[in-house]
Image 1 (cartoon, chains in turn orange, yellow):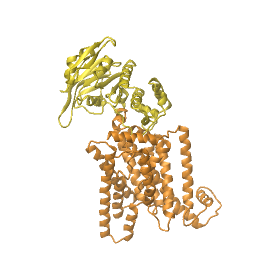
Image 2: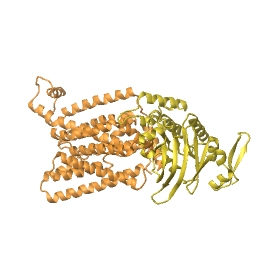
Image 3: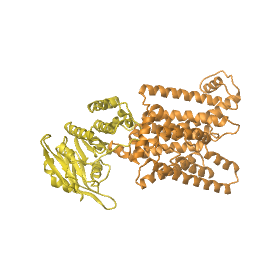
Amino acid sequence: MQEMDRVNAEGAGKLSGANLSNGQYRAVLAAAVALLVAVMLAAICIGRYGVTPFNCVKILASNFFDVEPTWTKTMQSVVMVLRLPRVLTAALVGAGLAVSGAAYQSMFKNPMVSPDILGVSSGASIGACLSILLGMGAVVTQSWAFIGGMLAVLITAAVPRLMKNDSPVLLVLAGIITGGLMSSVLGIIRYLAMSYTADETVLADMTYWTMGSFSKAGAAEILSVAPVTLVAGAVLVLIRYRLNVLSLGENEAKTLGVNVSATQLVIILCSTLVTASCVCVSGTIGWVGLVVPHLARMVVGPDNRKTLPFSLVLGAIFMVIVDTLCRSISSAEIPVSIVTGLIGAPFYFYLLYRQRMSMR
Amino acid sequence: MILEVKDLEFSYSSGRTIFEHVSFSLDKGRVFTILGRNGAGKSTLLNCLANLFVPNGGDILLNGVSMRSMKQKDVAKVIGYVPQVHIAAYAYTVRDFAVMGRTPYIGLVSNPRREDYEKVDKVLNELNIYHLRNKSYTEISGGERQLVTIARVMVQEPELILLDEPTAHLDYGNQLRAVRLIKRLAQRGFGVIVTTHDPNHAILLQDTVAILDRAGHLTTGRTEEMMTADRLSELYDIKLYLEYIERVRREVCVAEDI
């Protein structure tokens, strides 16, 4: 195992030749933020009902200033009611999944984990599905999603501890075990729901929802999940230097004076809250939490002071682009996970190849 | 006294006792070398001192205060720990890696400041590895990594440094350089506790030697009284001699023809 870790580490070395100076980092981050704004604006304009960027900016501005209207009522409602909430939700979910992925990766000292690989996403979706089937409201659904997610990550993290083996591969295997268990439970729930519910739309929703979608994202949805996501995400960003120290391993972090179990608990709670809130609004979306932090590390280096904020912006950009593709490639909407998988899987293979990760 | 260990005992939940009745103390500027066979419990003892393992009995006092009653952060201001190997998951630069030694002085939501990096640069200079400062920790050699880990513990500014077999993964030259560095750490005022498998390192360090035997008892004394051919032969269960070498003017531990 040690041999593997060493290969792993040397690979990581090759990968992150990028160790930007603070000035360079600020420039890169500013460029990424500008790109995010541009991408979001483009996403609001693109669609079956096209809006020119000029009108789009004016419609957005008219919420705050007096602007001479040069647009139609339909344009107004397409931008404000349909697209803006959806684009904001996609950005929030992308940022949230990327940040929680980066946090899990550092906390578990394992670049191979993410909310979906640890089973958090499927655990959260069980909680959310149950709650939706029982007809609960948004807050209750979020709480159940959080409980499901916590349960999943705790089971996954317990396996290596029980076996007294902290190899990175074992944690991934534990995640596969938990994820497998969770998707079976989800299958049972759907099966039972099918036999007891005649409501076709609920079932169709559930199927669609396990593949991820922003089609239901409206102003009410984003308002219900944004506060939790933003607060928990902000905590992660604030304590991101601790993530560096934790990524040295539990023992070393302890001898450097970190209260490891308390810090880990805070990080798990926040990452799981973020993931669960994302799941509530968009269903389970794979790959983003795994791949975006890697991409961020390639650009700004492994230091979480830079990786975490950059992952956040990168995740938002990525998700807005993916969702725009999903709703505009064909007449029917494509589930988000299909596209993230098509992009994420080959990219992750490329990363593995470059890192020469040995999986013995 | 920085460190007082009183009647320390450690046993696993299976009931196997690793050591018991371990008592010793250490002052600043002193080197305490622990010898023992494989599996004797040297690392376990060091882990107890580092507050990583909780001993089953006895007490560890840091400047007169029981470690049990101290916060991890305050322990880290007194005791620094250099692990045997650091397995890196992420390729931090040498500077960013070493600055993590400042963690006990950094608030929960704060980052290292310029002064912290200045301390790092000073120590990297002192260890002659300043030129590595912007390299990835994973790109440098094993010997250099160990120096970087020692730089990290130096900027931590503890009173006592624990080193778990610091020579274990080094080539012959680097082993001796590591021993020389340990001496220098003591001269700078750190108390140093080090475990090693080479009796000659204990002789070179010329201070206090402790032998952890199979029964889990720790015997301590000055180098000259502890390092005898009989005692070492018994410890390692192989015939060993201590021969005085005129050229280097010290005794050297050598094995019988094997």
